[in-house]
Length: 450
Image (cartoon, rainbow, N blue to C red; front, side, top):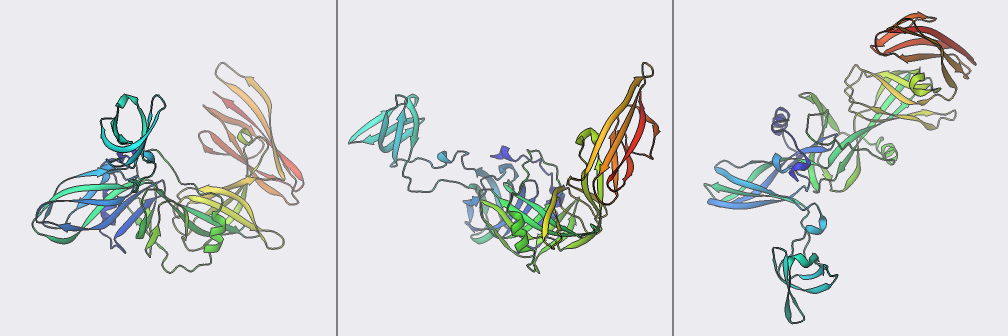
């Protein structure tokens, strides 16, 4: 199980030490990262015996990284060693068979033997059935099961520790570990004004817990950012029900909502109350950041090399409010009767304050582009010249501004262009184009490649 979440030793030391000193609202503190893992710190009661003693810390997540476990014992108690027990990957193997169990043995000859288990040694099975004892050699056993177990299978991890204490009594120890199976994502509902010049953001955070352990009355901290880890990415992707949940939650007052603070190179959001997060939770919705309004504007982009004849409809705003954790943004507008309608969805990355954001919402129905190569010729062994004509047709009743985006590779230069153009990167240049209402406009350029 330790291989399930490999994290370099000391990777998050600076961050975790800062969090560890913070006051805990309860006995469990869960720090959840958006890409599928968590740092957990919890206090556990322990009964000390003078001298050497052993104890077991149970009910730990099945997906706990056994190599990340840290134990901090009370003063005067020295840790000798500890081991981590993890449940089998196969739930059918999670219940250990013991003598006295009623079992069913399937042999390679497809014979089914039922009886009471007497001995299980190295795969050899000894059964008591119908008053006699039967031995089935390991090579003949296909499977052995207990169809009616009287105890629950082990589905949690456990830490077995040995320590030496100078006293007896009841104390509290601190247990810290990393686990996979916990994740969160911000989901935004953005409502744009009729003139598309204002965009109101509201947000809900969705939590998932598939770690193999329930957390009750835990202090919750969410971290936006991406610490370096050595593992496979399993980002949480909420599905179709969250908008309805969000519309219910958005009216709720949250005096004990999330408090934002920067920590190291990340942003952390601490919930002001304890929370229950049962194992198996898919979509626990909590109101997230307070609503905020941005100035916004429309931008149409025609990228004929990638989009053929389609023109992208993009809503642009500058984040003047606060750091925005990455998540899905659903943009809504109103129809002529004032009813909300979904205009499109876009993926927002982690966005610092002050950054410009482009929300790609879909393709404009009433705008059509066309890209045609007018000529292509070789000027020399090393120089090739091409001429292109880009046309955008506008079927709207008002003029629109469209950004024509073109891509060029290698060593290139624009020789002629019928409109002004701007190089935006080593491989991309853009040409602003105003298209009249119910009309069209074109730009022609000649480019040379070396």
